[in-house]
Image (cartoon, rainbow, N blue to C red; front, side, top):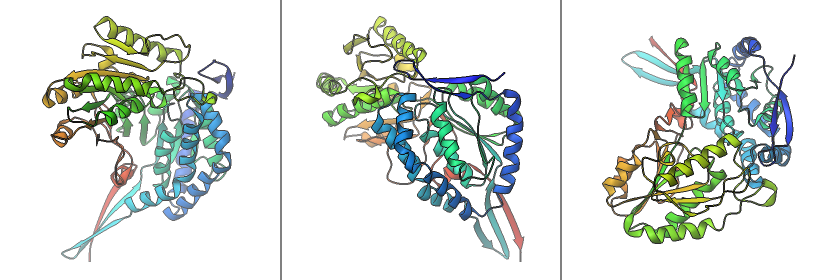
Length: 450
């Protein structure tokens, strides 16, 4: 008997649509089909593979507005952000593919009568497991390098956003060879079955706990892993910082996508001497944010589900019981949403300091010296990103912070082709950049004497 996975609007819980849940017993068959497709695909020159992918992405272009509305209905983010996400997937393949091609080009070394080739060959079948908060972009960033480098893909999207994922795959498959890109639907059971199947690489974005479980289950087959896991990003505001700029960033980064973002600022450390003026500016900017559904021109949409909303509320309550103060957003009476909230006097005994929050919360702590700020910021198992605002000593602070990506007087965006990378328990492997693209390949060294 067929079972269906229902997708519901996070605002009003109304049914949007449903997809057929993949039987666990069918996953091995899906993998076998993927293997057959991959053996043919890897023999196609990379330039032709690029042409396939560019044409496949072009199928999204006339559907951008329709897909964006679906994404907003299903996940809750506002329409402009959804349009941006879909558009990015539709238009970025041509230049992304060229970068990947350059990264995996065979390198030649010659010395003492020997010629060596360093090849970057396909691994085989890649399992892509992606989250709901950027349901197209985060899958797309893993699917494209997998396919360009000659692998096939079996895609397991979040059970929260199955409809937009299915649309993406259906449109790509108007162009791609049969079985090269397949999708499976379900929950943790289907995800674990995919991890335990005969795949060669698992590219995953999600929680730390899920990442640990994947690593454990993948170990018996020594499967390759690329995993972006949780985050608890810090913002350090030094005493000579541009306070207005730092406050503006704190609010924007904490509230973006309703705080449902891996690099959301979840801990703010401000020098005690400027705390009062910083907090007043944070309140000032927070007042500009409108909370509501995607079709009401809102800035902060709903929390993805009641379980996550209750987790955020529990963190706020725990913090208040342990001495934190709410200076903005005390009344949480909008069902399905978390109103933008500013907490002060936060310390490391609170869940909101240690656990990933994933909600629109500005969580403020204080420090007296740069050394204290570094120590407090590093007091976390996570290390995805961090931002520092200030002048004197700011580069030294950046050097001491345990994070994969850092911004000084700006966010995490870089000036070049750099990887998306976390440290500590925020990541294992990485993607993006030449080094990241090569993680989707198997290196082969061939040396020949003349």
